[in-house]
Length: 149
Image (tube, rainbow, N blue to C red):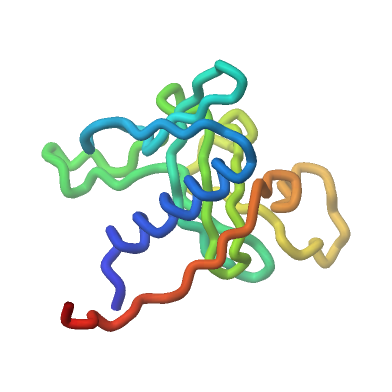
C-alpha cells in the first residue's frame, strides 16, 4: 500500500508540471506549516493553491476540500480552507488531468466533485464539469520497487 504522503507528493508534482505548462509561475513556500502548498503567479497576481488528490468515482473526480486535524491536539476534526487558499489544484490519476478550481466555485462542504461523464439525467445546472477546470494532462506511473541503489 502506498503511503499517503507519497500520494500527496505525486499530486503536488503533477500540479506543478501542469501549472508551469499552462504558463503560471509557481512559488513554493518554505516549511510545512502553511495551509497552502504553492503560490501561483498569473501576470503579477499571486494566489495561494492547495493541492489535492482526486479519485475517479462513478463518472466524477471526487476530492476533499478540508483537511483532517484529528492528529493535532486538541482534536479539532476537519478544517476547511475558506479564507486561507484561493484555488485547489486537483490531480486525478484516473483521468491523468490536473484541475484548477477557485475556492469560490465550491460549496462549504468537506468534499467536492467534478463531473467527467455527463449526468444520466442530463442535468447541467449546479453541475461542475471537469473539462471547465482542466489545465493540463500529466501521466505519472505507479509506485516502483526500490532499485537498491
